[in-house]
Image 1 (cartoon, one colour):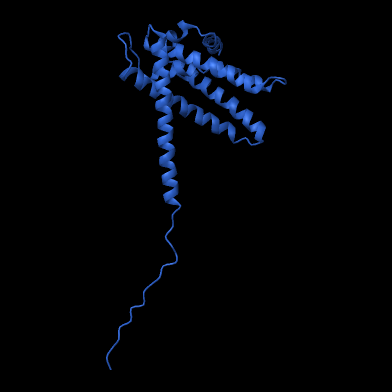
Image 2: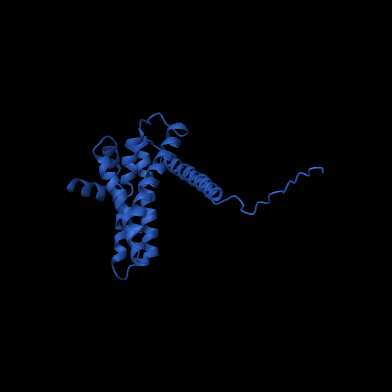
Length: 198
C-alpha cells in the first residue's frame, strides 16, 4: 500500500522517471486500475450526494474504467501506427499502466467535500493537471524525445475516441429506434368475395 501511495505522489508531481518504472512493472496494472476506479468513484460520490441517488457510484466506476481502456487503445493505435519513432517500443498493457497512473492528480477531487472549496475551479485545475500528466506518460512510454509528438498523439487519440463514441451512440440510437417500431395493428383485410352463378 505504501508503494502505490508513493507512486501516486510521484505521478502527481509529474515525475518523469515514474512512467519508465511502471512501464516494465507488470504488478502495477492492478494499481493503475485502483487509481482509475478511485477517481471515477469520487465523481460518482459527488453526483450521488447532489442527486441523493447511489446509482452514480457504480455507473461512474464502470464508465471510467471503460473510457480509460478505450482512450489507451486509441492512443496506442495512433502512437504505434502513425506517429511511431525509432525509440518506440511499447505494448498495450504497459500503456494501460502508465495512462492509468496519469489519472493520479484526479484523486484530489475528493477535496470537494471540504466546505468553501469552489468545485468548478477545482475541476478545472484537476483537468489541466491530468492532461499534463497524460502527455508526460505518453512521452515516456513511447520514448518520444519531443513533447510535441506526445501532445499530437494525445490530441489525435482523443479525437479517435470521440469519433468512436459518436459512432457507437449512433448505432445504439438506431438499434433502439428500430426496436421500438411495432407492426401496425390497423391492418385492413380485403374481403374477397367469390360470386357463384345461380
